[in-house]
Image (tube, rainbow, N blue to C red; front, side):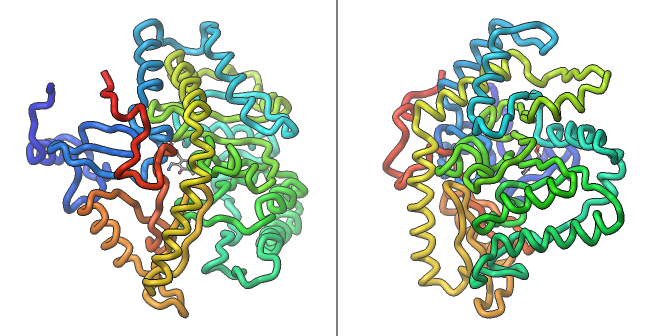
Length: 406
Ligand code: PMP
């Protein structure tokens, strides 16, 4: 192997030559991974870890069809979107075809990261009368639709519309009452960093309707939730019957190849075509398009959306069985393979248990299972594995995973 440094050397060299705020997981006992396959990562000793975190390696670590598509294209041509290329337009068409036709989402901008996808939107929003600086300065925040811990809970008869009404109140008090219009409403279709908060039935649809009535362009952030992870739908907004004007895509779109996209309607895209050319050095590169097509092909060929539905239901059921046994587990929630387990030290008071969540994540890591923690109180264990995840990952490997990647 070309790697000559041992783990201790790497830790030392990393400290010496990289920024100290570049984060590392399990900082007290960091991991060094040298190989990935399906749902598994392999460290320098060859020990394998079940990856329950990586929603970027969406179709499985190092899927041979994706690896082959990128190798082939990198060996043939990789250049920017200023040259015509048949793969670029066919990828755009393939991607757009994954959206419900009635939404009219017919235009795509290819970029390199989820953050860039949002930068484009700030500019787009500017057309609606607010400068980008103003948008950054005035983020009105409505309560997150958290039916476990928030102001409206699962015992409410109609929690979805109730949370949407709370949003409408914020819009009325902070925007329309002041004679203003709302430029944009951003929503992760299922808030992930907030702790896998699956919105109650009808929330997202009604929230978009309220925001749109105040003049906003409605933006669904599908960076974590998209590409079949929900099981019941290819997009999490669609699983909730919501109708965005713009959708931002990232992480899973390239299975680890750095690419992202903004999908919108032509009328909104035209507002962005304000006379300045749009060019992105790496966005929509020939290789990115080849990878993007391969990822869509593999999702379909390997039946990954159906697998996410099946295994997701199973994972939730098993976690709920654990919840019956362990007082520490306050809530289990999720959709498809996007699951959260909220830990509490006291079920009645719902007192967050961040230290216990960190301890569970570390204990899992020592047993060879990688999960992450998140949420406002850092007490939610997140499970969002590659979609080839199986009911019994120890004994069932995807067929392709047994052949070595060459
Ligand atoms: N949106 C969401 C929901 C995300 O989780 C992230 C990354 N964690 C981003 C956007 C930004 O994506 P990137 O890191 O590719 O810039």
